[in-house]
Length: 156
Figure 1 (tube, rainbow, N blue to C red):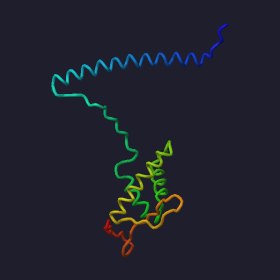
Figure 2: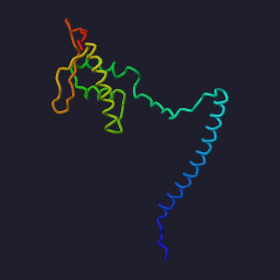
Figure 3: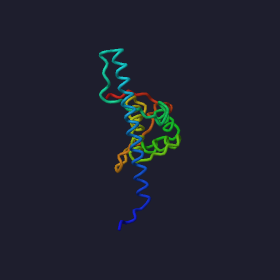
Figure 4: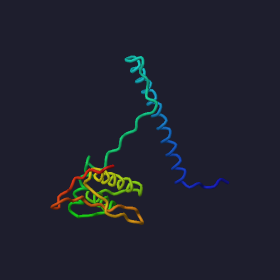
Protein backbone atom coordinates (compact mmCIF):
# COMPACT_ATOMS: atom_id res chain seq x y z
CA UNK A 1 0.00 0.00 0.00
CA UNK A 2 1.56 3.32 -1.05
CA UNK A 3 2.10 5.93 1.62
CA UNK A 4 0.41 9.32 1.45
CA UNK A 5 3.02 11.94 0.48
CA UNK A 6 2.75 15.46 1.91
CA UNK A 7 1.00 17.65 -0.64
CA UNK A 8 3.27 20.61 0.24
CA UNK A 9 6.29 18.63 -1.00
CA UNK A 10 4.64 17.32 -4.15
CA UNK A 11 3.23 20.77 -4.97
CA UNK A 12 6.63 22.38 -4.41
CA UNK A 13 8.26 19.83 -6.71
CA UNK A 14 5.66 20.36 -9.40
CA UNK A 15 6.12 24.15 -9.23
CA UNK A 16 9.91 23.85 -9.45
CA UNK A 17 9.65 21.44 -12.40
CA UNK A 18 7.32 23.87 -14.20
CA UNK A 19 9.65 26.80 -13.48
CA UNK A 20 12.63 24.77 -14.73
CA UNK A 21 10.83 23.98 -18.00
CA UNK A 22 10.01 27.70 -18.46
CA UNK A 23 13.63 28.68 -17.80
CA UNK A 24 14.94 26.08 -20.27
CA UNK A 25 12.52 27.39 -22.91
CA UNK A 26 13.67 30.97 -22.25
CA UNK A 27 17.30 29.84 -22.44
CA UNK A 28 16.65 28.38 -25.89
CA UNK A 29 15.12 31.72 -26.98
CA UNK A 30 18.14 33.62 -25.69
CA UNK A 31 20.57 31.25 -27.44
CA UNK A 32 18.71 31.81 -30.72
CA UNK A 33 18.77 35.60 -30.30
CA UNK A 34 22.48 35.57 -29.43
CA UNK A 35 23.21 33.50 -32.54
CA UNK A 36 21.32 35.98 -34.71
CA UNK A 37 23.09 38.96 -33.12
CA UNK A 38 26.50 37.30 -33.52
CA UNK A 39 25.76 36.69 -37.19
CA UNK A 40 24.67 40.31 -37.74
CA UNK A 41 27.77 41.63 -35.99
CA UNK A 42 30.05 39.37 -38.08
CA UNK A 43 28.35 40.62 -41.26
CA UNK A 44 29.24 44.19 -40.22
CA UNK A 45 32.75 43.27 -39.04
CA UNK A 46 34.24 39.92 -40.04
CA UNK A 47 36.88 40.22 -37.29
CA UNK A 48 34.30 40.65 -34.51
CA UNK A 49 34.27 38.00 -31.79
CA UNK A 50 32.09 37.87 -28.66
CA UNK A 51 33.70 38.61 -25.33
CA UNK A 52 34.86 35.48 -23.57
CA UNK A 53 33.07 36.47 -20.38
CA UNK A 54 30.04 38.75 -20.08
CA UNK A 55 30.69 41.93 -18.15
CA UNK A 56 29.05 42.17 -14.76
CA UNK A 57 26.51 44.78 -13.86
CA UNK A 58 27.88 47.51 -11.66
CA UNK A 59 25.93 47.94 -8.47
CA UNK A 60 24.54 51.28 -7.52
CA UNK A 61 26.67 53.16 -5.00
CA UNK A 62 25.16 53.57 -1.54
CA UNK A 63 25.99 57.28 -1.31
CA UNK A 64 26.60 60.16 -3.71
CA UNK A 65 30.16 60.59 -4.94
CA UNK A 66 32.39 62.25 -2.32
CA UNK A 67 29.78 62.09 0.46
CA UNK A 68 31.89 59.90 2.76
CA UNK A 69 34.96 62.12 2.51
CA UNK A 70 32.94 65.32 2.95
CA UNK A 71 31.12 63.98 6.01
CA UNK A 72 34.39 62.79 7.58
CA UNK A 73 35.74 66.34 7.64
CA UNK A 74 32.42 67.86 8.74
CA UNK A 75 32.07 65.43 11.64
CA UNK A 76 35.62 65.99 12.85
CA UNK A 77 35.19 69.76 12.55
CA UNK A 78 31.94 69.73 14.56
CA UNK A 79 32.61 66.97 17.10
CA UNK A 80 36.35 66.97 17.62
CA UNK A 81 38.30 63.70 17.75
CA UNK A 82 36.32 60.60 16.76
CA UNK A 83 37.13 56.96 16.12
CA UNK A 84 36.81 55.37 12.68
CA UNK A 85 33.84 53.18 13.69
CA UNK A 86 32.04 56.16 15.26
CA UNK A 87 32.49 58.17 12.07
CA UNK A 88 31.25 55.26 9.94
CA UNK A 89 28.22 54.72 12.19
CA UNK A 90 27.35 58.42 12.14
CA UNK A 91 27.56 58.65 8.33
CA UNK A 92 25.46 55.48 7.99
CA UNK A 93 22.90 57.04 10.34
CA UNK A 94 22.79 60.28 8.35
CA UNK A 95 21.86 58.35 5.20
CA UNK A 96 19.74 55.74 6.97
CA UNK A 97 21.90 52.87 5.75
CA UNK A 98 21.02 49.44 7.12
CA UNK A 99 23.61 46.74 6.51
CA UNK A 100 22.24 43.25 5.96
CA UNK A 101 25.50 41.49 6.72
CA UNK A 102 28.51 42.09 8.91
CA UNK A 103 30.70 42.11 5.79
CA UNK A 104 28.62 44.91 4.25
CA UNK A 105 29.08 46.98 7.41
CA UNK A 106 32.83 46.27 7.43
CA UNK A 107 33.11 47.22 3.73
CA UNK A 108 31.42 50.55 4.45
CA UNK A 109 33.66 51.18 7.49
CA UNK A 110 36.67 50.35 5.32
CA UNK A 111 35.64 52.99 2.76
CA UNK A 112 35.38 55.53 5.58
CA UNK A 113 38.84 54.59 6.86
CA UNK A 114 40.28 54.89 3.34
CA UNK A 115 38.89 58.41 3.05
CA UNK A 116 40.40 59.30 6.44
CA UNK A 117 43.78 57.87 5.38
CA UNK A 118 43.72 59.96 2.17
CA UNK A 119 43.17 63.09 4.25
CA UNK A 120 45.96 61.98 6.57
CA UNK A 121 48.36 61.70 3.60
CA UNK A 122 47.30 65.20 2.52
CA UNK A 123 48.12 66.50 5.98
CA UNK A 124 44.58 67.44 7.02
CA UNK A 125 44.10 64.75 9.68
CA UNK A 126 46.17 62.92 12.21
CA UNK A 127 45.75 59.81 14.32
CA UNK A 128 45.80 60.64 18.01
CA UNK A 129 45.34 57.18 19.47
CA UNK A 130 44.55 53.58 18.57
CA UNK A 131 42.22 51.25 20.44
CA UNK A 132 44.44 48.36 21.62
CA UNK A 133 41.61 45.83 21.30
CA UNK A 134 40.05 46.74 17.94
CA UNK A 135 42.95 48.72 16.42
CA UNK A 136 40.45 51.45 15.49
CA UNK A 137 42.16 54.80 15.04
CA UNK A 138 41.05 57.99 16.80
CA UNK A 139 41.14 60.87 14.30
CA UNK A 140 41.31 64.63 14.64
CA UNK A 141 41.82 67.60 12.35
CA UNK A 142 45.37 68.86 12.21
CA UNK A 143 44.99 72.41 13.51
CA UNK A 144 47.49 75.20 13.16
CA UNK A 145 47.67 78.65 14.69
CA UNK A 146 44.34 80.22 15.60
CA UNK A 147 42.51 76.90 15.44
CA UNK A 148 42.49 76.83 11.63
CA UNK A 149 43.05 73.63 9.68
CA UNK A 150 46.76 73.26 9.01
CA UNK A 151 47.75 71.70 5.71
CA UNK A 152 50.99 69.86 6.31
CA UNK A 153 52.35 67.67 3.58
CA UNK A 154 53.46 64.31 4.91
CA UNK A 155 56.93 63.12 4.04
CA UNK A 156 55.73 59.66 2.95
